[in-house]
Length: 237
Image 1 (spheres, rainbow, N blue to C red):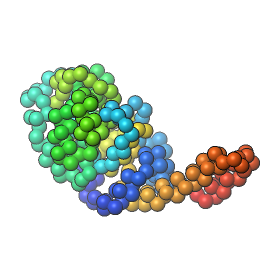
Image 2 (image 1 turned 90 degrees about the vertical axis):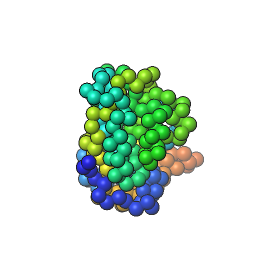
Image 3 (image 1 turned 30 degrees about the horizontal axis):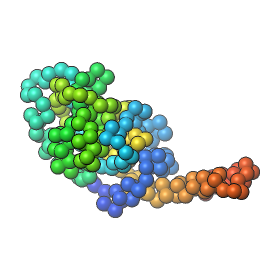
Image 4 (image 1 turned 90 degrees about the horizontal axis):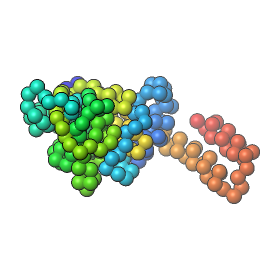
């Protein structure tokens, strides 16, 4: 397994990042100029099928599956227990990130109640997939968020093709060990080299944005005053 998990971040930094949503973190990443503004996050279509507005942060444990065709050998997930060792080689917290190679035409779910229980026992915080999920009420009761394309009835022929390799989820390339933050907006990949600095920058941006929001909601609102607040905020960047 290859990836970006050689140096796990301290728990206090992870907890600080978890206080922000993906939009805040995406804004903070932009300030460092480490990648283009149209890279590093999922495209529209991913949703939290288990409901609510959970926030998921962890290191990616990647795998690729096929769901429409029978496997050459074996029959289902339990035939690939080697993936479990791959997951456990990553630092916690972990997120199972699974690409369905048949996502557009796939008939089978990527995760259901049993597989979710296994992944949670392996200290995964949730699942991110371009495929589908089933047993959704039961998985939701586990407090195990699943971000997926949609729901499905059957697991069909779902089987693991490989694991520990780069995957692509709604336009986002994810390598094993990548630090991901997911919420109702989608998933953002957090560059390791700037991760420790993001909470401070995100806090500053949020304070600046709140000044504009507060003025817009104040009794003394005027367009002239709004322009001045925006100019002042820009000068503070």
